[in-house]
Image 1 (cartoon, rainbow over the protein chains, first blue to last red):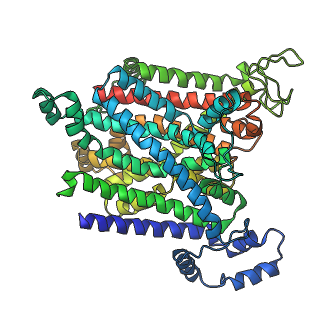
Image 2: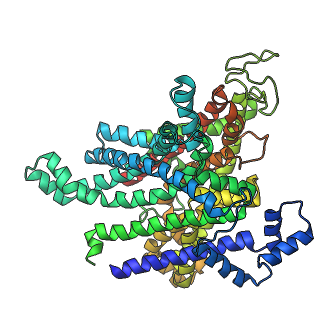
Image 3: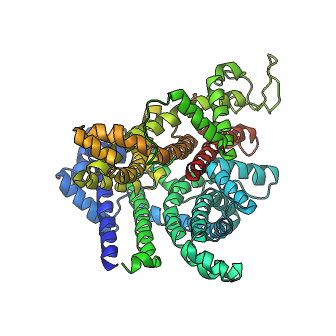
Amino acid sequence: MLILILRRIGNMLLIMLAVSLVLFLLLEINGDAVAAKVLGAFSTDEQRRLWLAANGYDDPLYTRYFRWLSGFLTGNLGESITFQAPVAEVLWPRLQNTIVLGALTMAVVIPLSLTLGVIAGMRESSVTDRVISIGSVLTTSVPEFATAVFLSAIFVFLLGWLPGTSAMINGFDPVQLILPVAVLVIYDFGYVTRMTRASMAEVMTTNYIRTAILKGLPFRRVITRHALRNALIAPFTVIMLQINWLLSGVIVVEFFFGYKGFGSLLLEASLNQDIFVIEACTMIAVFVAVTTQTLADIGYGFLNPRIRFQ
Amino acid sequence: MSVAEDRHSPAVSAFGQAMRSFTLLRESLVAMIGTGIVVFWASVAIFAPVIAPFTGTEIVVPFAMPGDVAPDGRVFWLGTDALGRDVLSRVIWGSRTVLLYAPLATFAAYALGIVMGVAAGYLRGWVDTALSFVSNAILSFPVMVLYVIIITSVGASALNIVLAVTFASGPGIMRIVRGLVLDLRNREYVAAAQTRGEGAWYIMLIEILPNARGPLIVDVCLRLGYVTITIGALGFLGLGLPPPNPDWGGMVSENRAFATVFPHMVIFPCIAISSFVLGLNLLADGLREISLRD
């Protein structure tokens, strides 16, 4: 088990390193292009040369890479071009906003999809199962921007109940979070529901469940005491991996509702070629994704006795 | 349609096989509905010049509501957008964009994923280690982050979108193919081909690959739906095909500012993309159900 954990963490660090190298080569291999982005299109060659020399871009590539990497590890993320401020200062408030959005989404998705999945998988091919399964295919088929359009049309245009944007101009307003969270929940819950349903349906066909039913235990007790323990191992992994999808969805949803979060920051930075912000955002996104994958692997090992006792 | 039994037999003609697949399809209502939706959009795309009342790029009357009549007597069934282009015609012409580029990108990704996956699964060793590491690194990106970075740095064009999708989804396909190949590589017919002295690529692509197609067909439908969503989302973010080509995601992006007052400008392209993806997902579901039944 310990070896498994160490291997997973080692693998995670290796992937982070590979990603950082690719990112560095992609965005910074050409120093002149970096200078042009930082100083603007109208800077002279002389200005660019001075900037490059002052910022150590004349050093060999590997020196620059290690300096860049150590800057990253010590929290020195460089300076944003558009915001004229250190990247960390721009990034943290945005990241906090997205954490709020993501946490609320997960807080709804997890109980909702586990409940629906268990109910559907409990009695395979029943009417309830059919309805839940079709419903989850339907909601995952609708792209986030389309869900956002539909919900806005109903709740903003027709009924006028909710605000159409979530820019939070006059301070934090929970009402403005309802639509973005709803869109993310609608897109994300279907997949977890289906996976939970599949896992539950599989457990229900096992011999020990048949035995429990045949020896006369009440159905409710069979489900809660016997089936759930095994059926909920696989969904744990799925939920952890869902965080990766959430980070993708956040870009579209934040852009749609004008929410000042991490996803919209990454998009703005990419469109403006604000390269130090792009680098920081990407590394954070990949870090979150890789960490959750690693936790999913390790957690799966802990939860599943067949792996734990190997 | 179990993978192991389904062998190549030259006696069955392509037509006979197609008929057999169709009969199988009829067993699942879900698959039939999915096929219906997909065929509907395919016909819309093919017959776009015939059925679209306007060209989709011509500017007529801006801000017309659904049902309004154009000066020349034609009806704007779904209204017009902020620039005065007929929404229905743009939805119809937009189907061409989606039905051309989504399959193109998916199949390009499959070509890459299959070559990588078959090579990793069959050759094993350092090839497998290297390919698996590369694909793990690519898969560790949240997909949309990867798309945004790639498209903003190389520029938005049809070719770049196809390449970005290939780059980002190839590794996922590789993982599936690799797993299937690892399972198939120890079969007797592979050993027979090896004894005959066939080359490694011949064995990989002619002997092993056709036998891995069952699960892959389901994955193609799902992935096609996902690529459609991706292309739509990129269009919505303003990173899609350059205007004035109508594409469903781009239509939402162009008219977003007016959406709260004129929802018809954005709702119909959204219905179009959602129904097409739904069709593909239902088809995949039905196919999976059928393949599990036998």
